[in-house]
Picture (cartoon, rainbow, N blue to C red):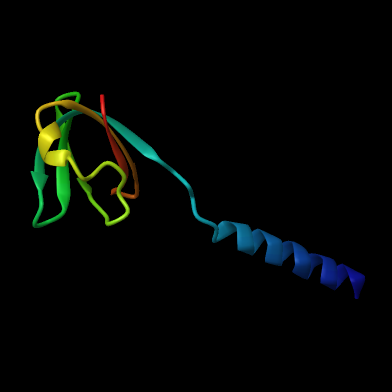
Amino acid sequence: MKYILTIAAAFALALGTSFAGCGKIDTDKGKLKAVNAEKKQITIDVDGKDVTRTLTPSTKGAEDLDKLVGKKVTVQSSHGKVESVAKG
């Protein structure tokens, strides 16, 4: 009986950790090319490649994005959703 309970507990712990959030953060550094307010997206030129990310209501630094177009920015995102935008 102890053996079965031990296996069940180990399985439950393994299953629980597999459903935890991945926590992966992508950092894009480049020039902000465009801000699309209708689609709530930004386009960044990273090493000659255009990268599009989606803004969310909780995005930090999104207030003055129009002023940053054409300037270097650092964008942190998770699964394509922007968490923060910073100049430089």
